Each structure stands twice: as structure tokens, then as C-alpha cells.
Image (cartoon, rainbow over all chains, first blue to last red; front, side, top):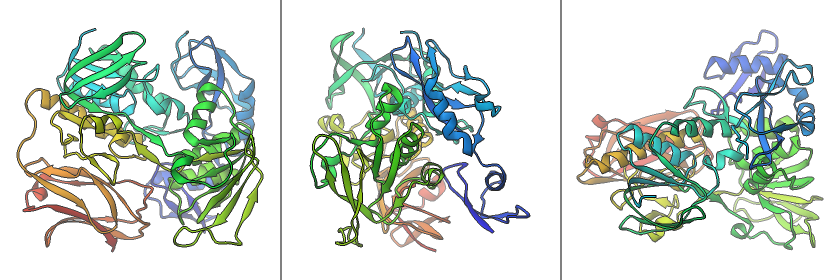
Length: 116
Length: 416
């Protein structure tokens, strides 16, 4: 048995998972079991960061991955965003980087920012 | 610009936006929001991480997205929003004095007011860390604004004091931006932040968390050069011989939030010394009729979803007040009993349609029970598997149970 703390919601269930059968106890909802299994097989995290925006009243635009990235690639993906420059206006959901580092995940805009 | 409104909301962050929209939905059309920043959304604009909205929108959003959902709803309503506007004073006659570059000096009359000014961070001065006074000691929220909005990196080698959520979030954020976070230091034997944030912000990046430790010296002439961290005993006194030295150029403080109530105090709104926010009833009405309070100005919340819900109730109550439908009659006081730090609200109308009570416990509880009593009479009982000071609790007392009370009400927590 391995203990995994679920990060699906603020409750933070302490899930006990069997490493071979993936049977779980201690999770308050099915998402806890799914999360614990993923942590053992393919851990992933949503990346949130910023990119440089020009032509706006603010200097950084918040962005996020449209789905969770492999955990091991989160830091590399954040680094890749250092080079990205975008131009206002942008809207929530606009794709900023397609298929980042070949993960199949897109980086999308997380704030409506008008042209200054 | 006109100078009289049915409702004026002070603050255009999550609390103010939700209160104004709710008042509008409940029949008020003559509403003004005053916001001191250049855009609405408040602190959410710099909280670029995700985890917002799980309760309210049933999906996981970032801060700017969550704020955006509310800002978008303003469109098509008659709610007026004045940004870049600093409120200087509120009088007990509900006159609001404010200044803005666009309008100059304003004296606005309001039939009702919602206080939604939020909170601010405790600083180094509030906790008296010994040592020199170099640059590089910032609150975590200030660093968050520099990094996420202004685009400045605040340091390369960081020690974080306090394990509140903002500190934990900034540990991850600084790491992703290329800084080395050496340690997160917490004076209490438990973290003040959510467990999920310990996992995804510290453990994911192998950042050590030192519980029962604190910074006992900051060194550096012009810029921070290092800190000394010491273990503390049960009375939070440093233990000699346990010193650990860290070479760092930055110290981020996440050592608590204080509701920002200068305006409330000026208006004569009575405050609760435990929450540092106004005393309110079940409708979030302060002890001055027609002045309501919600969000972090009332008490510090962990989740913006709860702020939105609470603020919607305040907005609805303000609308009812303007329409002359507000609850009247006598109150029962609600008291924080054993193991509770505070309760909100602090009193409830005897004839209220039930009451939702927020509180925090003073220490960590495993299997436990929350009891709501009135004298010797047990009104309600709630079980909890886990409670911690870092996690705000919520209970609902329905009208039928509240009606059984024949005196003041006490809420306590104990092991089951």
C-alpha cells in the first residue's frame, strides 16, 4: 500500500492505494482513486505561468495548459514559455503555444486583455 | 456622474463583484462599484494558479479566469464600475468620500453599502524578525504581483517564512521561474495552508518544509545575504543550538492576512477583535443598519468560492434592505466556544430562516464533533473526520433547529 494525498480539491484526501491492484481506500470521491492511480502510472500536473504581452496595460499575460502535462515535463514547459511573446488583444482560451514540447497539450490564454 | 445610489460596493474584487451582481439579480438597478485598482478582479488577477471555482463553477479555473467570469456578467447590467478610485472615508450617514483622476473628488450618498475591501498581508514589522534591514524581504503577495503582473523576478535564492497558501503557491511559482527555493519555514507544528498545496507546491519540487521553526536572524547590508533558522519549543521560543544557516538573497513572508477595515472603523462599524472584521448578523449586516460586509474584509477565507457565495448573500440582503424587506426583531448571540477561534456571523435574528455559520478551530482535530448548544440544550451536531486551523469550516443550522433556541448559541468542537 502506498499513501497518496489527492490534490483534486481542497479536501486533500489521504488515499491508500495498492500498488498492484490499484484498489483504494480513504478517498471521499471517485476522483481520488483516479488521481492515486495516475500518480503511480502517469503523474500529471496542470501548468500555470505567464508570457510576455506587448501592447497592453500590463506586462504579463497568464496562461495555462489546457490539460495536465506529464509531471516530469512541467519545469521544461515553464522554461519554454520564457521565450514566448504575444500581442494584445487576447482572450481566454486563445491558443498561445500548440502542442508544447510534443506533449499534445496546448498552452492557452487565461485572461482577457485589451489593447492599450 | 450622479451622486446618489441605492447600493455602493466598496471594492471590485471577487467579493464586491459577487455582491453587486447578486443585488442586481435581486431587483436593484442603481448600483455603483468603487475599485482602487485600474481593473476589477482584485487579488485574483495575480493568482494565476488554478484551483479556483471547483464549488462555484464545478470546474477548475485560474484566478484571472474566475474573476473574468464575474466581470463578464457585468456587461448588459446597469451596474456602474468606477476604477482607479480611492475611497477616503465612509460616514455613519452612508456618505462616501472618494477621489479618482477621472472624476476628481466625490461625495456620494448611498441607501446601502457593501464593504468588500478585502485584506492585506502582515509584514516583517508585524512579526519582528531580528537582523538587519536589507532589500529582498517581501510579502509573498507583493512578490506574486511583481512576478505575475509586472514581470519582474524578485530573487534567485529564496527562503519562505510561513506556510500559508500564498507562500506555498509562491514557492512553486518562483521555482518554475528559475529560482531556487531553499526552504519553507513554519513556526507552528502544522502548516497553515491547504494539504494539496503542500503536495503540489513543495513536495513536487522537493522543497523542504521546516515545521516548528522560524527565522531568527536576517543578514545582509544592501541585499539579503542569508538567514538563520531555528527550531522553536512548544511556546514558540527559539531553541539554542538548533540554528541552520541559509545563504539566500530573498525572504518571502506568508505570515497571515488582516482584513482591511480602516474605512469600517471610521464609519463606526463595530469590529470583532477575533476576526478583525465587522460583527455581522446572518444577513451579513453590520451593526450599522444598511451597511453590509463580505469576503476577506469580514474574515479571511481559504477559498474564493466561499467568498462568492457569502458575498451573493450580502448583495441579496442589501437589495432587501433598500426595498424595506430586511429582517427585524431581536437577536441571539453566537459565541465561539471551546476550541473555536471565532464564528461568523456573531449574532442571528431569532426568527431567521436558518443560519450558515463559518468558523475556524484552534488546533488540528482528527475524528471530531461540532456541537451547537443553547444553555444545556443541544441544537445540532456535526461530525468531521478532519479539521485544522488552516481550513475554514461551515455549518448550516436550519430554521427548525434555530427555532428551538431560547437563548444565546454556542458552537464548540471536540474529539468524538
